[in-house]
Length: 76
Length: 159
Image 1: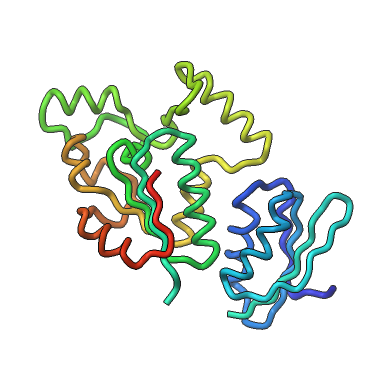
Image 2: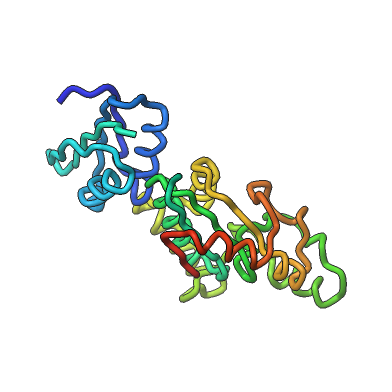
């Protein structure tokens, strides 16, 4: 999936992937998309929950080579 | 207006304070307006790392200042601290597991706009004055400020 921005949080434990995602989203405009790479298992549930509580749109979650790749769209 | 979260940091132990910051940063990253109230032993988290406290008014507060040295880098583990050996081991383990240090978490919290407030009454008890606190602390307040804020919070925690 093509995205406007990418964020690699490999090697970072909770809460950093979410904190970095939130910080990155602050720099983005509404409608832009972000790809987030993580190797933290908690990220699987957290990225969905984060979108739910912030009102941003969760697009999809992929899993390849032990890495989780989340896609979100800035909605607010 | 965004939802609000309030965390009272009463404890001054490394592990409990770490939990408080994970929650604060998680809430702030989730778009919440977060306030942390530091009181009693929790004041140690927001005390500067160096030197004796300047606000001590008598020998008992001075003693307290010496035995209860502040600064986030001095916080002990609530279990198995073993004179600091346990804390050092825990810090090493955390680093290996790629968990942020408390210092990084505090910096992230400030960056995310978490509001740091200090409790005036416990500052008086401990002989701590404003100059003893890190600059991230926005204000020194009383219980009424906490209550007024907490009434409107979706999340209220006491750690």
